[in-house]
Image 1 (cartoon, rainbow, N blue to C red):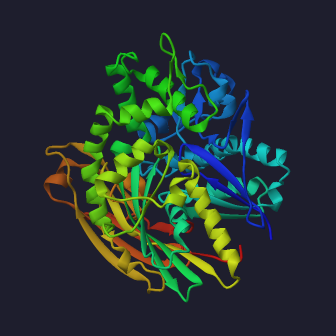
Image 2 (image 1 turned 90 degrees about the horizontal axis):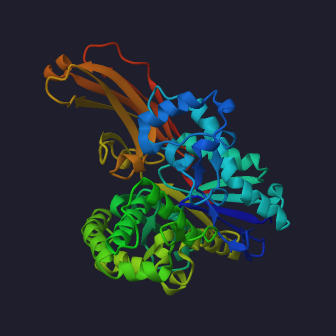
Image 3 (image 1 turned 90 degrees about the vertical axis):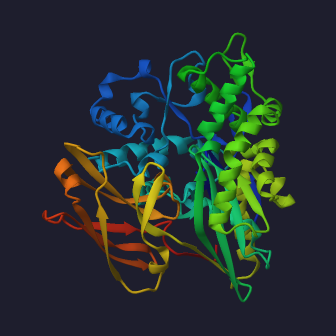
Amino acid sequence: MHPHLIIDFSSRNILPLIVTPKGRVIPCTLRRQGMTSRCFSAEIYLAPERYQKGESGWLPELNRIIEENGSDIFFRGESAGWFRPHQISAEESVMPVRHPLYALSSHRITEGTDLSLVANASSAFLAFLLQPVLNTLRDMGFQPEELNVIALVPAYLSRLAERIVYKVLKKMGSRRVILLNHAVALAMHFLKLSYMQKVGVLHTDENALHVSRIAIEREDGDHVTLEHAGSRSIKEAGWDSIANQIALSLYRDALLPRPDKRVLTCLNRALSGLFGGMLPTDIPTDPGLPLSYGMLTKKLGRDMGERIRDETSVKLRRAMDALELNDAPFFITAGPFFMIGQFEKLMLNPVGKCQPAKVRHMLAMERTAHGIVAMLNWLRETESRRITVRHKYSIGIAATEDCSIELIPGSLLQFGRERRTIKQILSLDSEYAMDRDLLVVDILWGNNPIPRHNTSLCTLSYEVTGDDIRNDTMLELMFDVKATAHGLRGKVTATLGGREPKPPKVLDFTRSGRTVVLNGL
């Protein structure tokens, strides 16, 4: 038996835990400048004035990608100006760098993107984030080569992003690496409850509050199947949205200047310090304003909380209806803002749900990792036990920024079914009298109606003219696909009107989209 290193990548912090062969849980604690934290910041900042111009060989290309993709992409490396939050003074002008896992999974990365360049930069970024974890492990007396690593990642990671996570963790020297969906990991808290058939998961990250349904099936008591059956996302309750609400509330109370880009950056860093424990929690106003859980609890109990509840409660109820979660016995919550009890009430009370006491007493940001601890302990009780993790995903396309269209339902893509050939015909839709534009079709793999919360399998692009629109030119997509034990395999051929078909695009997703069997861990 070997110890396990659990790394939760699903939030704004990286949270590592060690589980010994006997089931003992050892938190990895980071000590710096007289402070101790069990969370490792996943935030990196760019300080333009410190940028070394000698390292500019690949920056122009990355700058082009950033301009095209807005907030969905990151850039730069350590030698070109990356710094950790504690290395930057409050007065310094900085820009947050986008996390590579979110960036690489963006459905906006098009055919023109140099993926090898982005992949290399992402590997460097992720290694930079994990360096403090590696140092801490060695200080604790653990060597990477003796550790089995279980990495908990968002459900919508692209194949490229998952490959990079796997590669970087293996480069750390890890003995074995397993990637698991974090929502499934949260549902593992309920393995011992024989009556539990489905669990609702609420999780906040950078972009949104994600509502997921995890279905639980049991065979003979020793075989459990967990299926990520569906997700809905509410952007009004993600980190960025709640941070903006806090800024506006502080401004209305005359505690904060008008929230501009610099003030919001300072507030973000102060909130990160509050939730991660490694940064000062003062917002540099005059005088400095210290954030605290008590302050946020009071604000969430007044007008700010009412606005958040009004914006989210209807969407939460709709998500529950769509996911058939109204009769789920429990919901489980995770993510930084759930560390504030008042925020948890705002999310759970409107839908009449509660959380089991044993989970409620855990730190909100550690609940995902402790779900894996529960899984490891359950498997060790009997050698014959095993867990199968699968995903109910479908193939779709991005129709708008907040809407996707399902092309092939998940019921046709179940493991064990034969290869399928499916034709889809789409009509072009654009503004009247358009002279020329670029038609971009993102082929998505997932179960979330919002495109950016799915995996981007591939992107097709065509130049189209106003005549194409007026003549109702059709785009024909021919899918030849099969769901395998390793995920999704196949190809798609696209033909626009009477033009020559484009060469077939390979559709291949082989990590968190596959069926994973866990036993003997």
